[in-house]
Amino acid sequence: MRRRTFLGAAGAAAVALALSGAALAQEAVKIGLILPMTGPFASTGRQIEAAAKLYMQQQGDTVAGRKIQLILKDDTGVADVTKRLAQELIVNDKIAVMAGFGLTPLALAPAPLATQAKVPQVVMAAATATITEASPFIVRTSFTLPQATVPMAEWAAENGIKKVVTLVSDYGPGIDAEKAFTGAFTAKGGQVENLRVPLANPDFSPFLQKVADAKPDALFVFVPSGIGAQFMKQFVERGLDKSGIKLIGPGDVTDDDILNGMGDVALGAITTQHYSAAHDSPENKAFVEAFKKANPNMRPNFMAVGGYDGMHLIYEGLKKTGGQGGQALIDAMKGMSWTSPRGPVSIDPQTRDIIQNIYVRKVERRDGELYNVEFATIPNVKDPVKAAKFN
Ligand code: VNL
Image 1 (cartoon, rainbow, N blue to C red):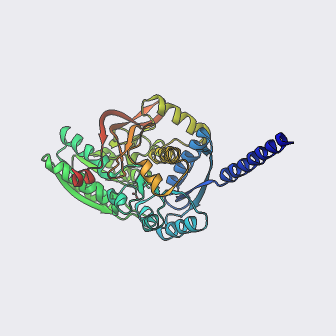
Image 2 (cartoon, helix red, strand yellow):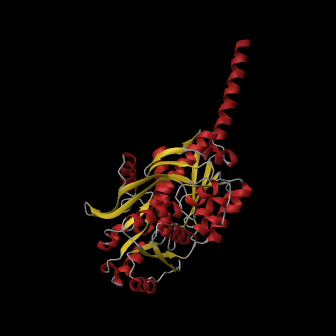
């Protein structure tokens, strides 16, 4: 009788334990993924969505005993919409993390909400240097334009280029690229003229006419991901492909997603960036193969790798906190390092930006496809704008 009572109590305790365990497991950790899935920057949304889903497919949807639920929202590339969606995800869905953010204005809009609600904001795409300063809850897995651009200026100065015209989209990352290039290139004795083109519905032809007239050794271009093909088309129409003016810039203009469709005009373009689908490592070969298998008509670009690594950072952060979000999660992410498809990376604990290799690449045809083929590496590059502030 006594023995049975004891067993009964133990049994009841076990049932209670199992129930609370089940209740905990049911309470999913929600990740709000806000991306431009429609509009002129939909390619960025598609790349990041595909990469985030691939990561979850490979790593499973349970972390630290908690189910992970990804909630995808389309902000259509409009900052007010990004902010409203972030607000709804925080208040109604009680997300632990928000992620994505395809362009600079879209990353800046919800930053005050991240601070107020103490919700980590993982920026997977936007790349203006100052973004991480908009909230102590922002961490970035993409890159910054100055980080990608200074190596371009140095390569140009060391390779016989003396006179350059810069042509950039007229907003945060373009202005960052223009300043970083001009500063580093003139410091090495180079000569620069600056041109800016509107971000929305750009017509490059009047600017390209100015470039043709200026006859520089090289044209330095920044346009955001997805716009490079439009630029290249007008570059050819203006006859600049036959002018002997070299095309250089950060790698956004020869983005892997659309490079193949540009044709021979892109051959020989020299760019500097953190990711190429042709990056020669076992991690990248596996990533590209799995990405293409899951998305038959796509090739991963630098946006995809920002999304893939962003998910990795969230998963590893949650493992450290046992599924907790908030301040604990952002703290757990600081200083984290891993081997990405792009090479070795870490999160700078001081700035919450990513420290990574920048590669110098040349567009070449390989096995019938155009690729940014890496030929030099600048290791462990920090964002130079913030490095100058802290050191
Ligand atoms: C940004 C920077 C967007 C680089 C991009 O593509 C890009 C941005 C959409 O910060 O707005 O390639």
